Image (cartoon, rainbow, N blue to C red; front, side):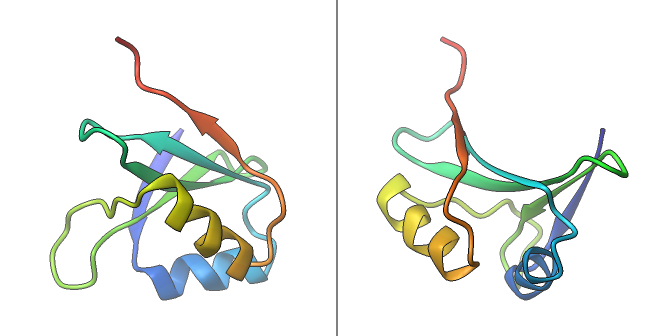
Length: 84
């Protein structure tokens, strides 16, 4: 799978146009933080949100991420925890 780092606005557009068929929260290296990943299963592409000014992957606490996902119009997502 190929992953693209996109800004939050582009991620929102991809979610609204139903380009992404699945959304998941992947636990980051930092404790209690998660990355938001959108998956386009048809084209085998993953999208991850990056910060607007720097090319670093954005992180959220899970409770904040739920609010972001609801605003995108999704009512379901998977959570993946890091391996210990």
